[in-house]
Length: 261
Image (tube, rainbow, N blue to C red; front, side, top):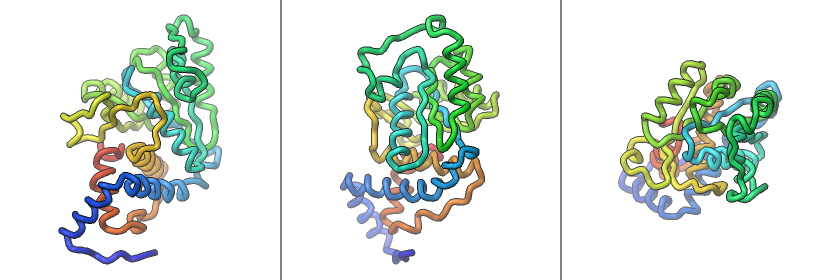
């Protein structure tokens, strides 16, 4: 393993700033770290008995489908066993984000129009999928009569919300059910009042993302899974220079890691 020499603080800040000015370098750094984590967890998560179910939850119009499918797509790109399941049968957003239909072609249906049988079948499918990480894209209404049944199938929920009031509604439900949760601020515009304090996503406009913010978020999901399952991970920071670690840990993680909340 390469040992990087320590450098003066002023030079460290300058080198980190140079990296941040080059988006390709930032992307490569985030991608390399994610690759290291996927290698560490690949063998474990490929075993059917180690399947991990992840719920993406939150109010309507918080980019849950874009985030959920992006997480799934990144994990698949990095050859980690993964599944995506759209549990929101009311909007057909899963079909749209996957490119099977156009967003304008979606048919929105009520609970009565979907029917209990199909809803229960989707929940059963979610609970029966095996191998890797199962990413569940949940409906947005917290008072949906089947929401509790969906959440009971999961080990970790990621709440996408615009503020603490929305977060609290979902975190209270998760706590009642004994489901671990993390959250991200999700807005259509940069959330200036939150971005200094909390990890924040914005402008996730119905396109699958492989941006640094998604790569960082997926990395933190893997690290959270390892913590929940008591898996010891390596000191991945040892693979990076001091300026690179500053960019990863002090900038990217601060803004986008679910472990910061």
